[in-house]
Amino acid sequence: MIDLKEIKNKTFKKENFYFLLIISLIFFLDRYSKFEILRNFSENSLYVNDFLNFYLIWNTGIGFGLLSFDTNLIYNLITTLIGLLIIILIMIGIKSESSEKIIFSIIVGGALGNFYDRIVFNAVPDFIDLHYGNFHWFTFNVADIFITIGVIAFLIKGFFLKKLNK
Image: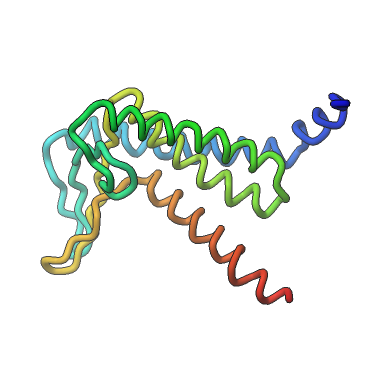
């Protein structure tokens, strides 16, 4: 039989409050950065230094422009899958231990920022252009930074830290 009191105790822990707080902070940091870029740089680029430009592009794919398609069906399918993945990550994050909660909250916060853009704008504004000479990395945004940090932390925790504990 389902014990609702046990579910409530696991769900409404202080750690889950921090989990949601980190998600919210990352989401709003991403929203603010995109708001400022959209307000100030609509079609312009801004040279910052020899390694960094701000240049607005609209990404209809997933991270770093991968899986960009011109068809609405595929775009909507990918958006739905991203939404489902975010829900799954939130559920896993709520049930995970403290260090993993932080990792999942970083990933979810970034993913929600980009998901919001996919729903509202039908594309994600990317604007950070790292380059060296003529080599340019994929243009990305603040949400992509947090997603990448979270995934790297998850991989390090999963592969390297477990081996150290054996």
